[in-house]
Length: 346
Image (cartoon, rainbow, N blue to C red; front, side, top):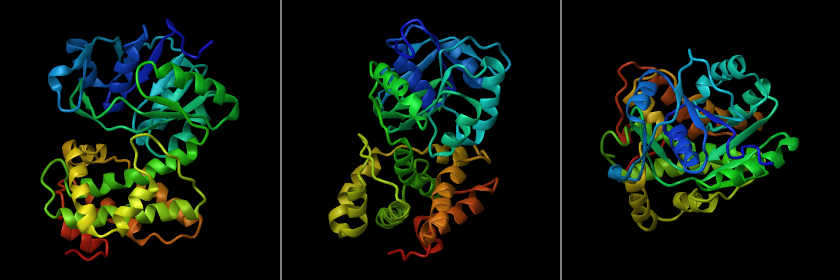
């Protein structure tokens, strides 16, 4: 029997960009999907339903009205609980899930990084982890856009869970690109390197104002990613090829090939990029909590454990901690960031 057959309830904790999209896609074939959401988001879903749309086509949204609960409500029984909150909220949310539902359900963590691989097993007997390979964003509470319908790569640290994990991935594949990986920790570190760019794009305000120096921005992004790959390779992390995510070879090429060759490609990709969740946190919502520690900090911790120097990423981490702590943070110019990271701007 599949771990979440038709008729078995699925509860999604968090109705932000990832929770909303995954929930909408699962609801297209699964009969019983409900949400736990906070104040304004819960109110918006109850009043208008959850509206999810592809790309820039807001008029093509799919709307549905799932049952939605808040932290203060009694939650329904669930065979699978999908947790999509950020890492900085994960401990508190796990405690609440145990208080509300116990620890018998399969719990799926869809967070960036590897912190969830340490936290979830402390609370739940059956944990699965998903590596999200698509971009999504929140326009307003209950209104979410997405770049593509997946992929998500599902894996388990506990070998005893891998059969259930594979079955769950196959089941979810009815609604979106879902795959099983037996190298989920390597895959998570691969994604961490790509997520390093979130902090850099937040620093320069990408999505909130034009990039003032695209050529220097390309050099900065390439240098951060290239050094990140160096850390992974030295630490013994293997590349995991994931649909929609660039290979290490392609990222290396951006750092090593002449910019007259790579520049046009970068500018085209820049037009396709969306505002990162970190930028939304520090610029859009002025939140003090970000994923800086669990993305950039995690890479530096890996470098420290293996005696690897990572000066560019360390300077980026320190600069972000300094700037994001400011209540009136204003995005920096690309040339200013370049100087602070010890790189020469053109």
